[in-house]
Length: 325
Image 1 (cartoon, helix red, strand yellow):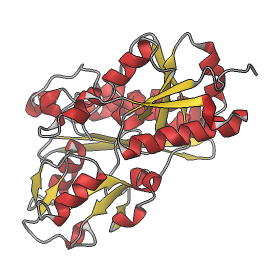
Image 2: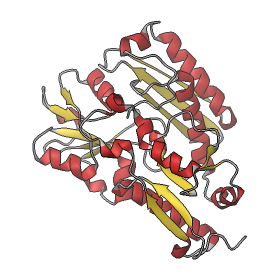
Image 3: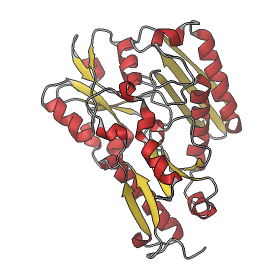
Image 4: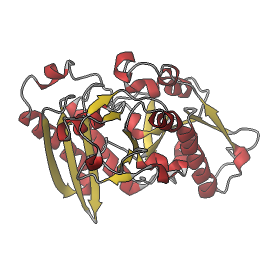
């Protein structure tokens, strides 16, 4: 073990500036401290404002998709202003700059979506015509498929902003990720957690990934101690599924890999944004076959979907961006 990082030459951790993003950066720092016996002063957390944080009055798909959550942070990593970048993996595009790599995943948190409302306890309790706010095309499509009677409206902002909108009557309910509420220490904001059997989560939901420069072996050695093998196996399968679908920023896609001893079960689905069509499937096999299973499941769903599926969505595949969640 070298004497780096230290108080004079700190490891700089890049992150978005939201409370949740900062909580994830602090978790990463604390795990590095514990794994390597380092003091807090050996690290510096560097908040970086992204375009998606600056433009809150328009849907994400209208301003370029979820890559806007990561672009400025990756630029800072490429030009050496930070040493690692901490991301919510569900926000990460399928394609990365060649000079960067993510090969460190922290243990996965709760994968479930949270139903949040000041009036109702669950989706089932929502009355006909109730207004539900969400910026996630996946959640909106899944809800429209199940409850076409509901009114769905755009709903962006951090947890505090969304809760204020609920209290102000902008919507009757919204959705958040249980993982985020747990990391913020506010799980009580969820009226209920929604089973993946009822609402399949976004690919990589609940996972923190740590990005580094591919050639930076000092950082690679530090991060190797943090990587959770089970989480890594699940995410590799899920992101192979997403990559094979060529998920565009306007494509509602859900996927979840789960482990049972040395077996991996992968479920996935794709939907039209209005929820009128849904195609789902699953694969099970050895953990080592996860990437192949992901690609195979994607091919099955594409074969089920009509040839004009992506035309109906209004986009062509191949952007390399994750579906908006």
